[in-house]
Each structure stands twice: as structure tokens, then as C-alpha cells.
Image (cartoon, rainbow, N blue to C red; front, side, top):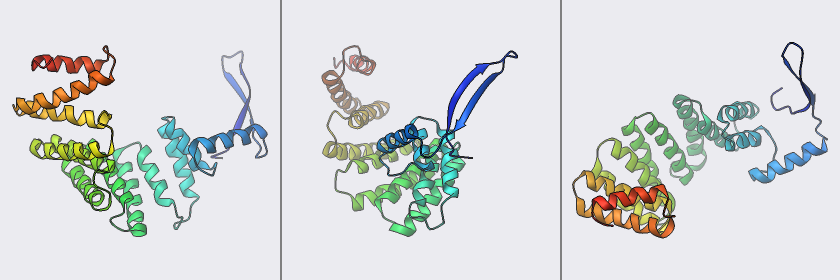
Length: 263
């Protein structure tokens, strides 16, 4: 039965070269098992040791196919009005084995969340962003941009100015704009992402550094070398303060700065 736990009693190789594994079904009162469950609860931060908890651990271990099986098994046990059913559909979207399944699961989670909390809840924005990311992976960039814009509108309306999630939405929009060859729009959102990141994150945070380096790259492609130099120099200065001299990102940036005579 799905969810049953067995203890390995013995493993041996027989004369025909076949491995034999002897298992015993664990009891709910097994002390070692109870200790394991308590550890699982502490690690997951949840109050239970059900299939959902176990699926989450498999997800964290990178075993997405196995996690999907347990999420589906747990979902079958729930009633249609379960308070957390949207979270389980959302989890299925994260571990889905293909884009179609991901969109289907995210869509179900989004529908339930909108009915429960309204169209403009900030968690709705997160689910919109996730759907946008799937469309981005599918190279459906216009569709991805549509979802990222909706998420951005919600976050700008309901979150404080400079909130890190606002910066995330701007960066997501940038990814779509770059793929659509709309570099001017990409730069606009990069600027806004940088402003948000500067208010909510440390100036040396990876998101802020990546944004500046990418802005330098776009300006270079546009032959706007003055702007490109500025952002490359800022990125290089942060790398020099924070990275070891032999770090690959720093070495690559030093090469770029050398081309621009900014060493």
C-alpha cells in the first residue's frame, strides 16, 4: 500500500546471481520510526507526518518523480473543500514531469486561491508568476509576459515600495522581454528591479549583481558603451570586494573590463 514503510532485514545474492531482499512491515508503535517521524516534522516545519510531508522531503531531495506520486496519492485522500487543497495542487505543479501537467496543476491551484482569497491576493501573484515561468520554459514568451505582468500589478498594488517580490516580478518580466527582443522594455524593468532590490536587499546580493551585469550586456548590444561601462564597472567593484581572486565570475568580469579599458 502506498505510504507503508518497511525495514530492510537482510540482503543476499543467491547462487543464480539474483539479489534477495527480506523486508518487514513497520508498526506504528515502532520507537525508531517514531524518532524518524519527529525528525521529519522538525525538518519540514509541519505538524504532520502524512504523505504530503513525505512528498515534500522527496522534493527537497530532488526526487521529483517520486514526490509527484506521493502528492497525487495524498490528494486522492482529500475532500473537495479541504482548506489546503490549493497548496497541494501548487506542489504538484512544482514537481510536474512536463509543462502541460504543471500548467494544469497551477491552474487548479490558482482557481481555488482566487475563489478563496480574491483576485488580488499576493499569493495569487506567486501562482501567476509560476505559470509565467512554465510558459517561459515552453518559449511562449508573450503568454509568459502576460502572467508576469498580472503578478507585478498585484504586488505593486499591495506590497510596500521596494519589496523584494516586486523586484522578482520585474526580473521575470525582463526575461520575457529579452526573449521577445524588446530590449528597451527590458531595461526599463531592470531599472525598476534594481531600485526595488536596493531598498530590500543588500547591494552585494546576487539578484542586484546579476541585474547590473545583465543591464551592462544589453547596453553593450545596443552600442551604448557609456552605460555598459558604468554597469560593468559597478559589477566588477562588487565582485572584487566579495569574491576570491580566482573565482570564475570575477575572472570573467575582469576580461570584460579589460575590453572596456576599465581595469
